[in-house]
Length: 110
Image (cartoon, rainbow, N blue to C red; front, side, top):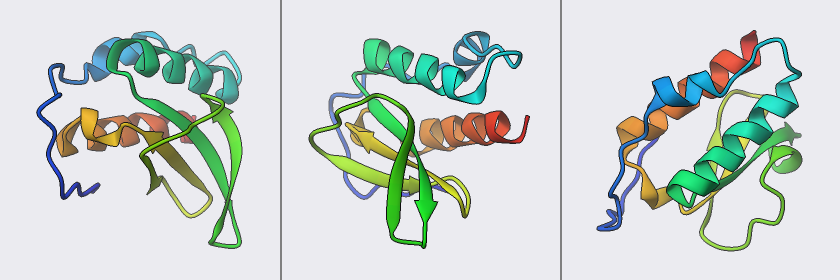
C-alpha cells in the first residue's frame, strides 16, 4: 500500500484504470507499454514517472517512462527489483496509486 501524508486540492480527476488498461497491448514489449502509460499519465494527470531497476537497494536506474523528471520526485517500490520515480505524486489519492501499482505489477508479470 502506498501512503501519502500530504493532501492536494488539485486532485480533480480520479484515475481510470480500466481506461489505462485499454492502452496496454501485452503483445508489445514491456518498455513500450510503460512508455505509453507514462505519456498518458503526463497528458491526462500531469504526472510523470519512470520505471527504474533497483540495483543494490539504493541505486535506481532508469528503465522506461518519462525522461527528464525534475521536481517533487517520489520513489515507490513496485517489487524488490523495480520501482517508480514519480513527479507530481499528490495529483492522485492513495487508492488510485494502489490501483496503478497493481497495473504495473500486472505488466511486470505478463
